[in-house]
Length: 448
Image 1: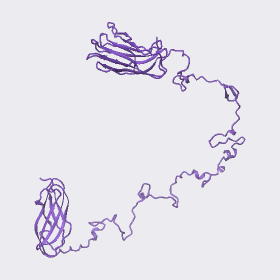
Image 2: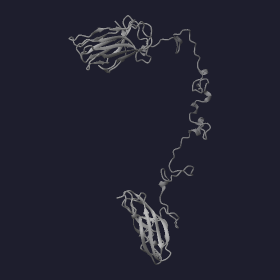
Image 3: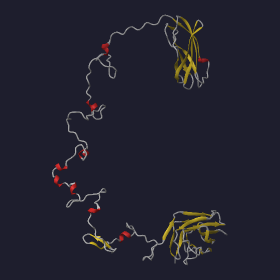
Image 4: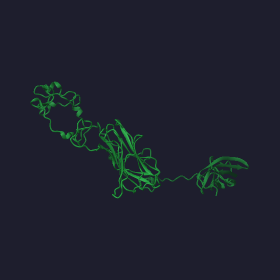
């Protein structure tokens, strides 16, 4: 089966024997393809070898397997009786089979006159009247009936939400039910159409009149801001030259006794006091400040480059001659260090190494150890550090307290300072790991 193919089935109009009357030639065409098709072509009629008619022909959309008419554009009216020959050609775009597109010469015989007109329809109006067997409805027909029509009840059309609601505004007469008046207070005000005379109201003598404003035994008037004008206020006595006095009712200016309010300056009060940078020493010992803390678990493997284990940013002015910064970590080696292998830990201020320690003792492995990195010493001028690897078992010796390398800082930075702790394995084996739990925090406080 071809994708695109149409073929002529037969000549439909005119018939092989037809009367001498006007007609439109029509050919039946079948869609033999797999897709919808629209057929176009031509039809020609010959008489005694002479071409007496020619017209283009078209079809509507024809679905696969369907047979539909393909009609000529022009009508044909035979001039005389006799034998005529009809021929044509019909195709569709991309048509793949050619021979079946031809309407081969087909003979027709035209004889006789046009059929007589149909006989007149007998009178039958009664069939269309009310009660007739073919009763007619005149609803929505245009025009006007000869007789007066009776209106159908339609009051609902004129009510609220009806299709033809009625507007009674300004209609004369009185409605049967009492109506709710609309708001019209403005009509009773000064300048309105129905000004209200308040003096004619009952008990009008008790009303406060404009004439009594600012008058003796009257009442104070208000300015444009709804305040009592200054000239209507009583004279306030001048205070004596004593900053601790306050104005009291009945006695003028006298010493003020403040109510207890210390709770307002305490933590959580609505006037909380900030003692930052105030001179003096507080009576109680102060807690060490926690700068930052982390809950991460840092893993340093044998082949990692120098890795930042922790970072601290110290605000300006936090460190002085008696304050230091301490990092408390919990760490452990997962294996004993192999020969010539070391775990190198550094304390840095930016890129400057303040101190460095190489752990090279081959002690028992995979045991918790404490690490303390002191960034400020007690004397206030040197910057030192020590690392203490101490297992949680008495049978395992600690790895020692060391200061392998120490830089000297003669003065503390007044600006914000960044310190880092880094770690790295040197000449380590494949299985070495150093696990550091950063759940501990940086602290500052008095060192001893």
